[in-house]
Amino acid sequence: MTVKICGVTNADDARTAGAEGADFVGFVFFPSSKRFLGLPAPAWIRALAGPPKIGVFRDQDEEVVRRVREEAGLDVVQLHGSEPPAMCQALGGRARVIKAVSVDSRVDWGRVKEYDAVARILFDTASPSGGGTGSVFDWRLVSGAPPGLEFWLAGGLTPENVGRAVAEVRPVGVDVASGVEAAVGRKDADKVRRFITAVRSVQTFERSNVLRFKGGSS
Image: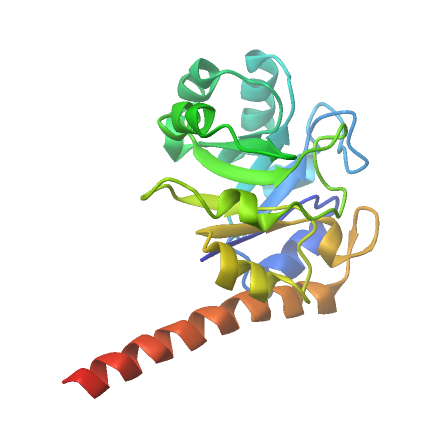
């Protein structure tokens, strides 16, 4: 299970996320976000050690994404707008791209399949701002995902609900921004710790159940 702490706006919060066991830290580079870091990318991002870095973009030119990826030393880019599958492929495909799919009242599984060929999929709550709203969508909408589709989950996740989300939705990763904040753009270290602990606790519980089942059937 992959945990990404997103919407990081300062080096201290990035280090905290890494120290607590986050697998990725995320930085927002589209201007409509309340967590926008500005362009060009701040130099401190490239200098960070620790978890791999993800840059979040929304309906920006491919050249802008490439330039910021280089400036910030990003490992992965996450596209949150209407970027076509061809752009995902051009930016490195599944190894280097996450494509956010906004969910409101339904999921276009045909469209998801197109993106799944060229990017990792992340389902997030539909919003004019492109995420980070703290709103949860109806998880039942993604429970009918095609067999074999691996995806990340975002949208209103918190330390209190992420364990249930992982157990019910079965994502391969979770992505949180506002759910672990003390204020917009400022992380709460205790919330980060409790969020990651909640995810790992579900994993530990499920592993122990599998081992118990195997032991009982031997």
